[in-house]
Amino acid sequence: HQTTPHRHNHTDRRPVLAEFSLKDRVIVVSGGARGVGLAQAEALLEAGATVHALDRLPTPDSGFSRAAAAAAAASANTGPGRRPRLSYHRVDVRDQAALGRIVGGIAADEGRIDGLIAAAGINQETPALEYTAEDADKMLGINVTGVLMTAQAVAREMIARRQKGSLVLIGSMSATVANRGLICPAYNASKAAVVQLARSLAAEWGVHGIRVNTISPGYIVTAMTESLFEAVPERRTAWPDANMLGRLSYPEEYRGAAVFLLSDASSFMTGADLRIDGGHCAW
Ligand code: NDP
Image 1 (cartoon, rainbow, N blue to C red):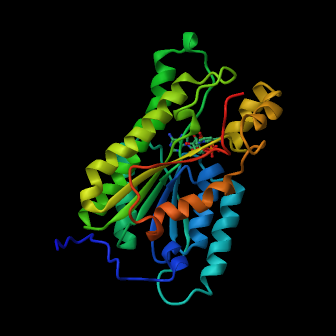
Image 2 (cartoon, rainbow, N blue to C red; image 1 turned 180 degrees about the vertical axis):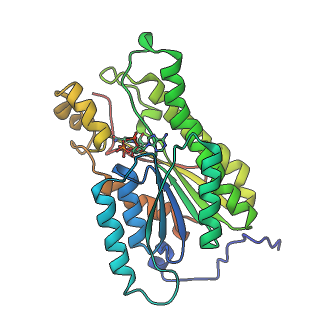
């Protein structure tokens, strides 16, 4: 038998729910100040992790302070080991040097780094004929280059510490679906790129025990979707009709998948895309 530092010990039969625990893990969440990223940060805290949120907002959403306070109160009752807590770091995910500094600082302070959720992203509805090169570069710069830079900063620390880990990149059903009613060509292209980026990083970093997967959500009720509803109010009723469950989704409905992908419960899963879209179908 070949033994590697990352060989899974299949004789270690823990109770299955223990495999979902993130106790003592240190996880970075980009876009963690609000929306999907914040909902996921809260779930990771509940599962026992210490969470470092990165975002470009000067101050996070009011829900962030509530989550940080709840984590501090709950951690007073945890047993031995690392106490789950939520911290905020302001950074633009396109800034490679700043990311390296911040993520390097987190890993040095915590002595480890175990995971990433890359949720920072933007959307903008622009017909293809109206795109400027600057607009397209901005979209791809944040949604693709920004995700690569964030994943790089985290994986670099894992590899330097010879530590295995799990990275979860937030794609979208827009990676594979284009609708006549929603004109977002560069966004859709950026999300297709994220899914293939994850597979490529999984192939490159698997040797280090680093797993990389995507979650591809359907429509979620967040600030991003609200601006698309304000632009065309009929979307509020049309979009729910476009999936098998007949409704929109909420950020909380992606929490379980994030905990699963970051935990040992998904130890043999990498390079995969978990599509969570209510069974989206064309309308
Ligand atoms: P939100 O706009 O609510 O949250 C995204 C966060 O990322 C914001 O706080 C935003 O800050 C931040 N961000 C944007 N650009 C940068 C940057 N350059 N550096 C650092 N932070 C940045 O969006 P959602 O929560 O809805 O989306 C989260 C992820 O989920 C995105 O990747 C999105 O594409 C994806 N998604 C969303 C869907 C939806 O229906 N909402 C569906 C499918 C996927 P700021 O406000 O300053 O831009």
